Each structure stands twice: as C-alpha cells, then as structure tokens.
Length: 316
Image (cartoon, rainbow, N blue to C red):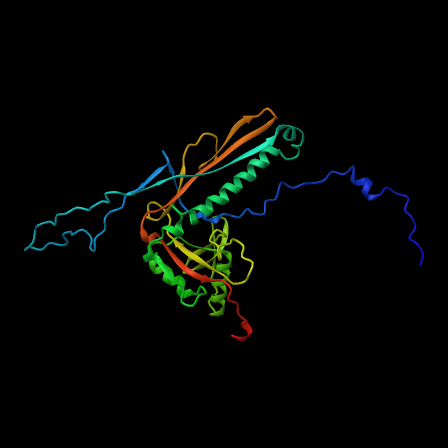
C-alpha cells in the first residue's frame, strides 16, 4: 500500500494561529424561560410591606332590599366586618456578590465585557431563585399557603382531564393558568391523547402552550418531581397548580420593591461595592420579592401527580 504523498502547503494548526475565532457569550444551562414571573401579575411596594385586608365572610351576603313590597318599606341595616389582624407580607431578599479581578476585566474584555457577563449570569441566577421561592418558600410560597379546602387528590395518580376539571371547580372565577412541571405537562398530554381529546395550543406572553378548557398550562421546573428539578427516573410525583392572578380579581400577586437605587429590572438592583487592595472589584446584587394569595379560591393544588405512566397507543 503506497504512502500518501506529503503536501507542501500551510497546515491547519499553523493557520489556526492567525484565524479569528467567533465566540458566543457564556451559555448558562440552568437558565429557564421563567414563564411564571411573566404571566403572574406583580405589585410594586413603597416600603416593602403588603397588608392583605380580608373581609370576615359570613354564610350569606349583606341583606338588601329588592323590589317594592308595599308591606315592607324598611331598608335592611348592617355592615361588613373586616379582619382585626390581617396578614402582612414582607419582601424577601435574594442576594449575591460578584468579584472580578480588574486586571482580568481590563485586558480580557473584548469582544465580551467580563464584568457585564458576570453580572448578567448572576442576575439570571437570582431570577431563577425568585421563581423557585414564589412556589416553594416556607413563608409565602404558593404550595405552602394554599388552603386545605383547595387541595385535590388525583383519582388514579396520573393527571387526567377529570382532575384538571376538578381544579377548575376550585378556581372557577376567571382562572388564569395552570402551572406544572414539564414532565407533568407531558403526562397530561398523554392522557388526553389516550382519550382522543388532544389539547389545543395558545400563544401567551411570547410562548406557545397547551391548554385545557381554554386555560393555558404553563411549564416550570420549580414544581419539583420527587423533590428534584430534573428527576433521573421515569416515574415520580409532583403537584399541578391552578392560579387566578391579579389584584383586581382577588387573585395571586407577586410583590417587589419599586424604585430601587441602581435598579436593573423589576425589584433587582446592582451596587458597586468598591475595589480592594488587590484590585478586585466587588458588586452586590439584590432582588426583593414575595407573593400573596388575596383569596383562598385564587389557587388550587392537584397533589400526588404521577408523571411516569406511558402507553402503547397501537394497543389501546
């Protein structure tokens, strides 16, 4: 077998030294679309405290006079009682500090500014944590604050159309969206396909989502499966939420501090802390957030949802 003749030409390795390499900005795999914070209505606060004044509700509405009864011309009298000690929500602080060696940022900031990229990735991390806290925080998280009367168990473990209909009976006053882990969304879609009623899709907040009864099903990996964002096995249990959002609708509202110094986005500020004797620049990033459920029927939870049920559609 003859040897391949040597080529008297410039080689790839040598040519590579003179080539311009097109680079991307840092790709952070943990970043998600964070649809919840896009579809949830937010309320800006002046002083970091939000008081939810609820009416003490009786079994019947306030009596009123209806029609003209000649035997009764007395207008009913009464008043609506307020809660004596309404709940107050204080904003939660999510913070981190970014350190950047100024010698590195001075020399290696083309084509991407090193400080800007570090701050950008830190902001993404804070916003990921914000979405998780809105759902899972022990104090104000939606899962922990849903009323017991608004919690529903699945009929057979897997999320079926009947289960989501049951949630709608709990949040029937203008429901805004379902919220579910992507695995739960897929599990529900399989159940619909199995029954021959594949859900339609709708475009909302720049995304396309499947819907049920006209209500979009929003995916988030912050509703964990067996306590994990990315479960390894096929099976596992999670929750599905149905939410009505908006202060005017007595729904769920996200809370943030308005008018922060050095505000970068809603409720998030970036402050320069100075440069130490070693030339390291420091930046403090703080995001202030919370969430409030204005009425019990603003949220319902479908519990113990099994996501690992699959079918052979050829044998159904």
